[in-house]
Image 1 (cartoon, rainbow, N blue to C red):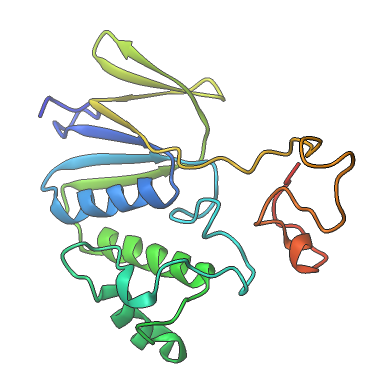
Image 2: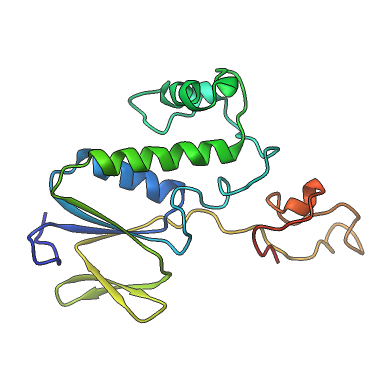
Length: 200
């Protein structure tokens, strides 16, 4: 790997997007690297959640059974074991666990990976929005909306899915039908009163 940009000789990687995919990559790098600077560029306060796992609604369930959705491919029962320790009532292999619980699991995995990483591995969560990735004179430059630049050897774009479209449904009906919600993550679709995200 080429020389890093931090002056200490470490190679550097910038992960653009701190939802599930970007955080899982960061976890693998933390577990495997011996010397690396990892920067996750994500405006959200918490990593690992993205859209699907930041929901606060217990009715939003995983669409895969608990016994088959480990975040660690070499440890297929890892999530079920984590549930046994942290939420024993949910630790049933065939159950469909709330998505917010899986978000807690991912955050816990990240915290563990950071605490057990090689001392030469540095990790930073940069709360910012990336707007461009450019080739610079000394490597890759990730341009942030606030004008700052993150210089790195490698950049990974892990943006995940965007929010559901708020387009009208004229193709199906002359007017929006009662009970229609453009986003499954909208708490109003479950009859709750508080929104956690600006849906439209």
